[in-house]
Image (tube, rainbow, N blue to C red; front, top):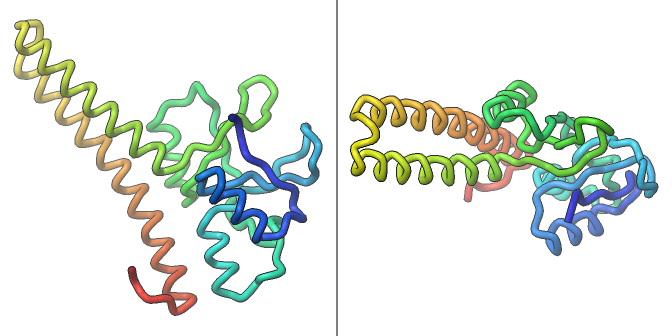
Length: 178
């Protein structure tokens, strides 16, 4: 379906409804409704929670978007994307077209976790079949396990950064742990 955008002056209750109906955790905030609108930032679910906790009921997407619009191109690796997330302490990356620079999607930490889980399952299954067929040696399996563990550590670190940010937000607003 592409990216979900809203102008900076969109009321937060509209942003929340949009997130809920589209089942997303982030929406791109732009400087206008035009197709060629400039990306201003990303409004995340955490931005909404923070605004609600501060009682900012009349706030807009532009007033609430605290998430920096960090971009990644489709040809960058998952490891590069995770590294960007960690460097910028963000849970969402704006995926942009290599040629036009236009947004074509949002990559979240949940997307990363899903991809790694699928990759690990595919890798294990492939190695199992190859091992049974005598096409791979035990050392190959051991190296693959090291790769899977390293990839899992990257995701775990990114997820921990996200959880730490959520805990900090809860502490700031005095919300109980769930």
